[in-house]
Image 1 (cartoon, rainbow, N blue to C red):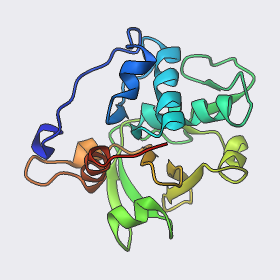
Image 2: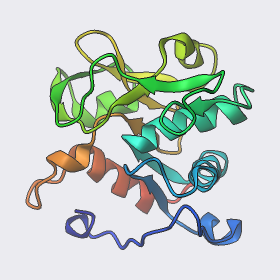
Image 3: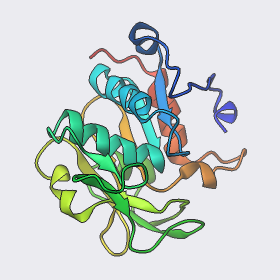
Image 4: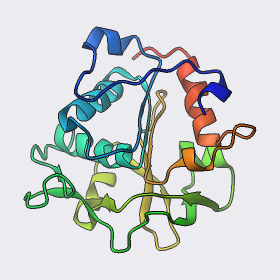
Length: 204
């Protein structure tokens, strides 16, 4: 689907990431679904570099979940923040099973006012597709209220479905998967915005 947007891309294994200097030269990082990843530490390291260096970033499904864990560990100070899929008995499960699995589901999302996601979508609600069983644990909703990270979309039950970091750098993570609604002739607006942002120079 990135080919249709004219974007050159390559796959990076979580257990074989290049060095920081090589990652620094990337125009964008998309953390795609597929968790548990071969290396959770590798996925979190790439997400952290994108956040700290101002590299254009998109996380979808598992990428959304791990973006929240990275923020919890390295910004909010919850060093043992974990994912229930890979560490179900951990004390601080930032990501836990959803009350109702969203595997193979479609649902309404509502971009919140004055967010980058609202600019991408325009007004109104939208239908998006999912393939996930995990989301933000209710007890850690404060992560989106006490720092820069903020919710930018909710569902009809006010459950968080996307988060973003404000600023010039594009940093967006969605629990839904825009790639599942992106036919070749009509790329999903989130993917189009990600590629457009990666093409713009940014100085951190």
